[in-house]
Image (tube, rainbow, N blue to C red; front, side, top):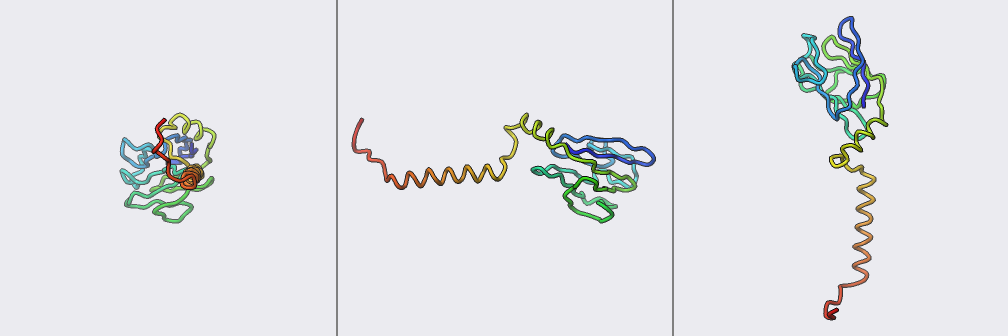
Length: 143
């Protein structure tokens, strides 16, 4: 889960995002729906990729800035200040424990981490090597 603080005009409100992706824009179906006229209907997207969260500008008219720099894509860190139009979104933190709980609930759809993939690949190679050392099975003898 990523924790954000949305500063739209004089108002501020905390936002928690549990989903793997969150859209930012003026469109009513955006996860973070803004009234800022300088924000495109579909302005940017925050995505969880593995254990990191990244923001991607969706070719918005006024661009997306992180810590004052215009970005197309940026890996987010605690304290980052995202600016879309006149709206500021501050990354307050990440809750990895909650992410793990959510991943366990959707384990059938969760991607397999690279270290686990490598372990499985190594086991397969070991089995193949053992089989090739043993030679072909003798199928001439009937049980």
